[in-house]
Image 1 (cartoon, helix red, strand yellow):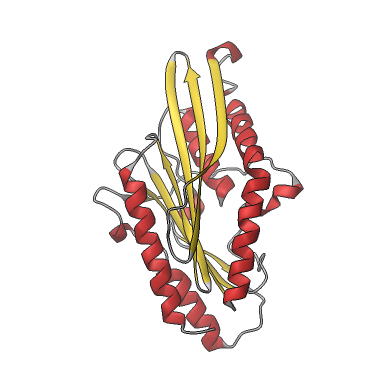
Image 2: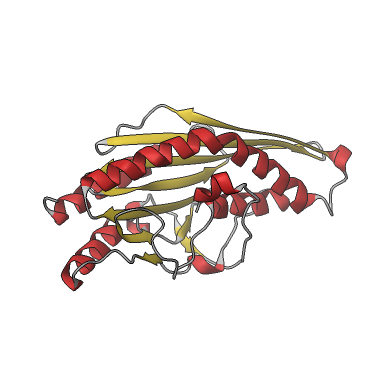
Length: 251
């Protein structure tokens, strides 16, 4: 998912600010799990994951669902394979995962983009373990994501912009915890570009939270370093995550 959102904003850079649209985003993305469960447990997990996602009604006015254009993945090492995209029919990648849902891409009036996601696990312990592993993966691969983003931008615009006309700097940083759910993390992938004397700053903010047996969050792409709608959307996503976990009851 991280790589798909990065590629979206790389394509936007290629046309100096247009929004990216991905054909597979027209409906919720689903990953099924081979973990042995009853039909009732599976149904409850699916419903909880779906309930945790942001919808267009959770966002401020002016947001629309967007789907149109295919994107490719970033080139990452096997060590950072956790960040590669998952197809709708891909089986479980994480121990104890019962259900996974991912929202469509929503686009705001100022070309912001947002996607939310949620995974339900068979126990709180499993969710805690995966959350910890995710934190370690970002610590290990954050710079690799920044480097791969820089290369993707060069590859995308290289056939229409001469090297001397393009200056790119990318970096990956951890942000203060947004205090959502029982534990949460936030990161920022920033690309600063000068293309033919036009300056652009793109930010992909990544918010991840866990509430009981559910882990989820959102990706937020914006041209603004401090976008108030990102914080509002993050709080809403955290509230929905907590409510969805409560619907599951105890482990």
